[in-house]
Amino acid sequence: YQALGRESSDVDKERWISDKSNMQSAIYFLEALKELDEYQQIIDYADEMLFYEPKNKIILELLAESYLTLYEYEMARQTYEQLFSINQNHLFAIEISKVFVEEEQYEKAYVWSEKAISAANTNEFENGQSIFQRGEVLFYLSKSCQDSELTFWDKIVYELALEDYISAYQMGQYNAANRKKSLE
Image (cartoon, rainbow, N blue to C red; front, side, top):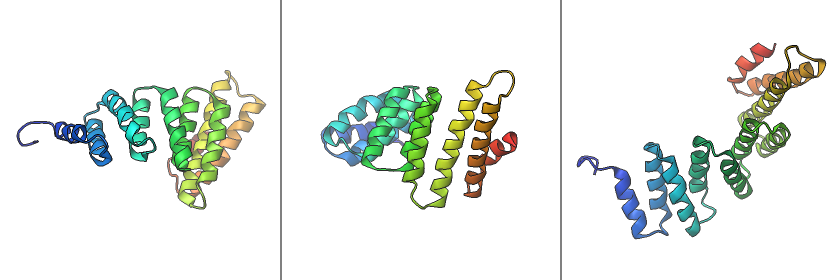
């Protein structure tokens, strides 16, 4: 199909339409749409696909990513919450926390960063990712509350964020280094 100049997504779509209960064809079709940056189409088709298999993690992840890309934070959050209820993966909790930070709901973002830490189990790298997110929540909370001068409470929250960045860095989260340096 590619040699003939047709989009391979057309083939995937035809395969899925011929048997809508075939989730493998559905996933190939959604991934082809993702490569084409057709996020609205992913949302439209994923909703129909989830009718056949409502707890398909791959389809739900593609749906959540599409909502995020299109700045539909409420729908992205709901989809990630659904994913977290299916699989207690720390990455889903981190994404929910990021959405709440984006919406400036820092208390909820902090709660979800704590859930991410709990879900990370004993894996040091996963713990580092989760602790980094908690540091991000604290950092953006302080930044949003800060006036022209730093208050005592701003400094305390920044100090807590710094502790998280240091811990995350020690656990292999090297993106924490920049935040750590700026807060120090």
